[in-house]
Amino acid sequence: MQFLKSIYWQEFQQKYGRKVSRFGDQIIIYFPLKKGLSWGLVPAFEEKDQTKIKTIIQDAQENGAIFLKLEPTENFDWEKIKYKIVSSKNVHPQQTLVLDLTKSEDELLNSMKQKTRYNIRLASKKGIEIIKNPDQGVEIFYQQVKETEMRDKAKFHSLKYYQAMYAVLHNQYHRLDVYLAKFENNYLAGAIVYHDFENKISYYLHGASSDQQKNLMAPYLLQWQMIKDCREVKQKKYDFFGVKTASDDELLADEKHSWYGITKFKLGFAPEGKLINYPKARDLILKPFWYKIYTVYQKIR
Image 1 (spheres, rainbow, N blue to C red):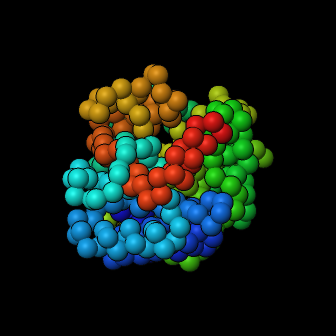
Image 2: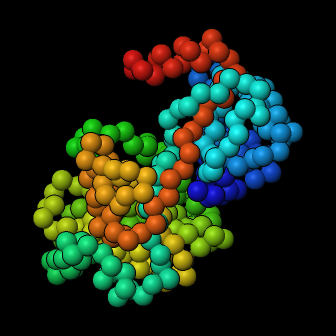
């Protein structure tokens, strides 16, 4: 998750129009609210120095933040911070699945679930074409996003968000790729992968698919091509960036969770992958009155 506080991610967020403050290797991403207020997100929170934490809180106060959402990567002694802190929902995935890319392609294929291997070969045999970073790729991907939103009743980012992401992270820094799966003249699936070259990890950030010709299994071949390409650029790990399993140490999708389908899909590629569980996020409350109004509004919206 270290990429979420990198200078590259910071510049993308700023390109999108959000204010970002940096304190060493920690950042605060501000989300504007009405009446000049905001709330701040601190992704991959690892700061232990109390003086630096006070500086972060001071910056948040100066920017009208009603709370800071801290997303820790490891357990933290919250009692050391002299503000009211409550458990809250994570913005980024609290649980993820990581595939070891140091294995050979044959080893990766053989370790997959049989149904996943079958679907990859079926898509290839049927003539699915995988295209990387085509012209208007972001806009075509966004068409898949809108279909996925309607089908899954989920909320994705705006087209402007994906365009800012591509402009900075691909065009400027060459750390992000857009993939599309195509059959004849129809685009059937799309995905976005981010490459953390310093830590040798690639992240499957976003995925979407069309309702058309689902029997061709395009997302399976798309995912396999991305995994192979990440190996080609010498990445050592492939992070599926978000799963929900039945328990913290069980590689089995949670049937009761809305992520059941996507988790089952990802586990098909890495049934022996490494499961990582991050601590729950915490809201550090700076303006109790406004925080109460904000939380009530979030529940009824």
